[in-house]
Length: 461
Image 1 (cartoon, rainbow, N blue to C red):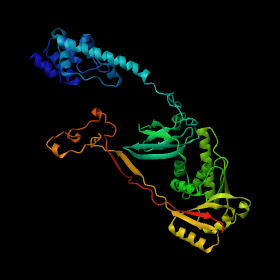
Image 2: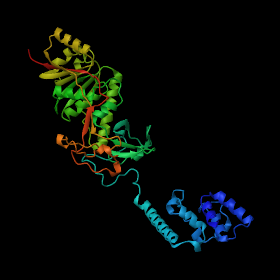
Image 3: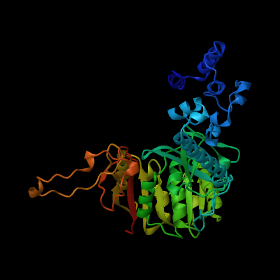
Image 4: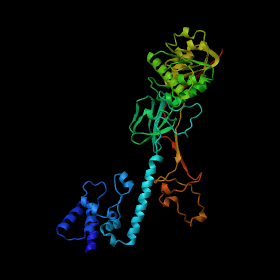
C-alpha cells in the first residue's frame, strides 16, 4: 500500500500534495516524518514564496536540485518519473542505481553552470559605431558616415521585400514594416553590413550605385532610365574631356551620367525651361556629390553647369561654344535643333529621347521640312529582360540531383531515387559541382516601355 501511495503521489501537483499532507497529519495515517517532509516539498523550487518553514527539516538530498540554466531562463529542469518517485522515498530505501543517476545529473548540472559562466565573455557584442577588424574596406572606400546616402534592402525566400534609399543622419531611425534601425547603429560600419531590426529581421545596408541613385532619388518629372542613358552614351560616344549639351535637365539623372562620362577634363551644359525641374536637378546633383565625397574622400567632378531658360532663345548662352555631342529630352525637339546644330561639330551625334512613337514621327517630319544637315541613322527601343536562375529544389527544400539516362537493358534494375526518401537539410550530403540541375525562366515582373531613342548625325552637305 505504501508503494502504491508513493506512485500515486508522484503525479500530484504541489498544492494538492500539500493538501494531502495536511489530511495525513490530521488523521495520523503516516507516521514517517521524513516521508511527510519530502511530500511537503514535492514540486517546489528555490524561488517558491509559499514554502513552509518545516521544509528545512528535510535532508538536503531529498530537496530537488535545480541547474543554473533553469534559474537563468526562469524555469526548472523537468524531472523524470524515477526522480519523482525517488524523492518521495526515504534515503535508506534507495538503490545504487538511483544514487548513480543522481550523481550523473549533478555532474551535468555543474558542467552546464560552468559553460554558462563563460558565455558572457565569449558572446560580447561589438560596440556601436565600430566594426570587427577582419572587415577590410575596398581601397578608396571608407566606413559609413553621417550625411551619406545609403540603400537598405530586405529579402525573404529569394524575393526582394523591401528597398529604401535614405540619408544617414544622427538621431534618426530607419522605419519599415520589418522593424526599426537607429542611424547611429549604421555609422562606422563597412558598406554591405547586415544589421538586425528591432523585430530581428536582417537588413542589408549598403551604398547605392549611380543607376540605383537615379532610380530612387527624389524627382518630379520622369527620368532617363539607366538602360536608356547607357544606350544614349553609347550612341553619342561620350569620352573623357568632351563638351556635351543637354536640353531638358529633368530630375538630373542624365546630367549625372554625363558628368561621370566626361570626367574632370570635360564639361556639361544642362538647360531646363521649368524652374521646379531645374531646382530638383540641382539638388539631386549636389546630393550625389556630397555623398560621394564622404564615401571616397575625394570630390566628384563639378563639371555640370545648370541653366534655367529656353534653349530656343538661348543663343547668347551658346555663342562661341562648340559641343562634341548633344542630348535632347524635350517635347518638340525639332524646334530647338536650328539653335543647336550650328554649335555641333561635324560628324557628331545628337541623341533624342522621346516618350512615344508619335513624338518620333513629329521629329522626323520636322527634319524633312527643314534644311538642317542631320541624318537619322537609327531609332531604337531599349528593352531589358530580367531572368530568374536558381537550383532545382524538392518540396522539403533539398536539392534535386541530375540522373543519368537509363539504358534499356537496365530497366529491370531498380535504384532508389532521391525522391523515394524524405530529405533533410540537416543531414543532406554535400552535392558535387555540376550535380544539381538549375531552372531558368523570365522574371514575372518585367520593365515596360520607357522611351524611343533617335540617333541623328551632323554631316556636311
